[in-house]
Length: 285
Image 1 (cartoon, rainbow, N blue to C red):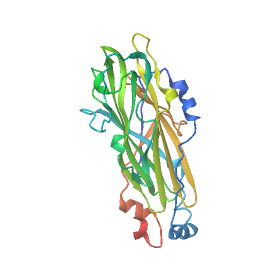
Image 2: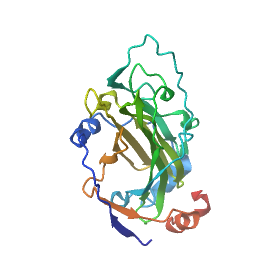
Image 3: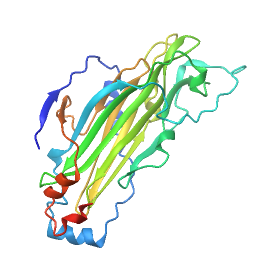
Image 4: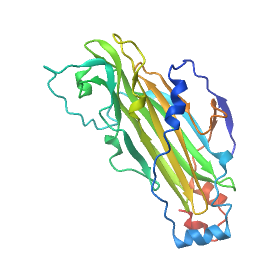
């Protein structure tokens, strides 16, 4: 498989980049134990190279960043309330939505994932509709893949990180809503299990502006685990997102090459079967 290396440079410096280590040190998500069949266990003894991920092959790919017309990629579940008599603190920013949610569970996108998202609102606000001047959502598309020791793609996952920004309260501030991870593809070869989850720790919800002109910021922690009968691998990427629309990956298992990405064609059944010298290759899928 031919690979093309491209280099992506971040044009903006992010003030909270130094805090990425704090998030990374909070520990990986707790995933369920992967369960394998007797047949998978038996094959692993005959062909351990098929059941072993090559760590050097694991790549995270930035496919591009675009805009979405609206926040219809999630089902907003907020209940606006009458703000009369409610003290809204514009410089105290909170996430009243999801703190931790599953994305891919045992090789399949989680049911109801379109209702899972995080927000960064001024305290007292209960709905995006109570803010104004929202910008069109920004959507960054990523691909994640891993090969076994034969060079066959065993895990091929595509997902999007989306968020709407620039929300204002009485024409003040820059807030975030509908911060979501949207799984698009989860192709997993026979003999492997793949899990992914997202988290937004409360400690990372901050105001990086001023008390009179707040700018919300958060860190979205994306954790994954891939397992075979023989071995497990896990890791975490951290995305820093600001209320003015800035986004950057500030922590990754692959920090030794933080600006290098690999362009790769999507895995297909023929490629995977050809790379897996099983006794019964039709059972790969």
